[in-house]
Length: 162
Image (cartoon, rainbow, N blue to C red; front, side, top):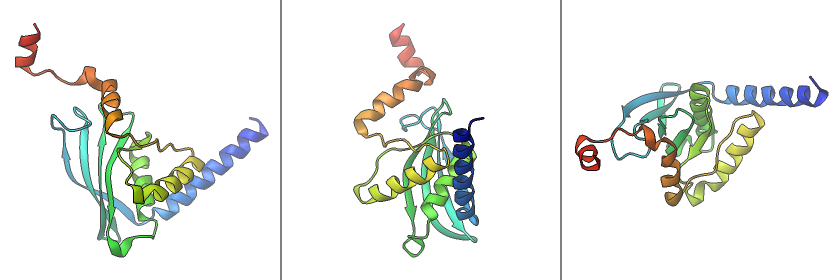
């Protein structure tokens, strides 16, 4: 292993350790899980999870996992007013990544959250984790084409096609 690779590995481990320490005490508690036709990740699964800190509900995250299991799509991330600016959103994203170990993709970054997503990308990249660029409404259809072959066809539509 070259000196550069050793140095790179050292800093990735250090950044991951820092994110782990920040996420201590933060837990994602699944409130609902569904896979319904018409949702973005169908036939994948969508989740709503509460973000708990020391047993107190501090926010919610709504996300979906596509049927290829290669991306987690963040639909919405809300932190309660009293818990904001304490790093809880970053900690919740880190917990989500630790659970699934695939790139995180926000569906739509709200203008006021641009700074948060920019900082989160930098912090996660330092740990070797990718947060992809958000996919806007027009790009969502292109993204869905990646797993379109896995969507079960309704019987009446199959009969029409045949």
